[in-house]
Length: 401
Image (cartoon, rainbow, N blue to C red; front, side, top):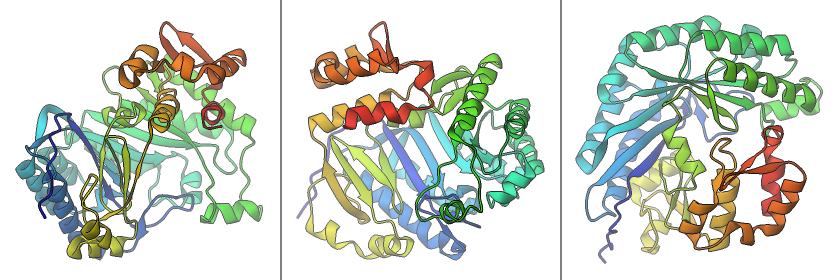
């Protein structure tokens, strides 16, 4: 039975999951695996196969506009694996003239030579998972790097000609005081990154930090303290020239994350690798999460893939897919779009996309949130008020309920 190919002309945003870590952090809730580095070559062979399977769904070569390697720790993968993978990408896809190609990296033993090779291959955006510049906090988080490593990776990245460097920091850490948070952010600003992401520590059920919090071995700052940390950071970054464009993200002009904006616009994207998710034409897809099972599926073909010839992407790692109805898609557009602190959700674009007026569809929700001072109109766009940015989840829940 032949596979029906798709005629699709929109540029692709592709996420590739690299689930390997040298050590799993105590707060981590991602699909990652420590101590499995021996499987990297085999896993990357499977990634290549999945990329080819996805490409074969199309009638013509598709154009990639953004490509993001996340994890896990993609920077522990040998360069030769990326060389092979990019060879497959170049054979089966095309890249737009100036694609955004990002890779996540942890500070530590990343040499100038490694970073220079990444640039040669085509990577042009580096996302550094620093989390803190306080060595005591880094040890508490089970990070394998220290403050000096953070400064070194910036130095090495610039020597390797990475201009677009982003950095992640976390606040609301156990035992963290405002002075510690201010020092971390001030340290990072001094390095002059182009993009900064700030995340409040989230304690997920089942991870090691959750158990320690339950046993009172870890004491978290109260919510008011975390809110003060967020508000101080927002003011400080604004004064230093960073634009606050999404709840957790700040960028210098021209350096917003184009890949992540695909998510916030609720646009289509393709996920490759173990546990990766995709969204295409009103459907949501997920790959098998187990590292071993992913490899087995890509080598042998999953039962789901063999029995279901409908849907997209047709990947041997496909575990399940769900069709989203129009109301689902509109709800997600509202919740994701409201994360964009400057743009918000455009009523004009919403109507062009869904042929519906969001002022009517979500009349009660909008009126209630507006009356509470949690959202506001900026011309034809609905956005969070500055006050509600830190408690955005309370706004989003209104649309779910």
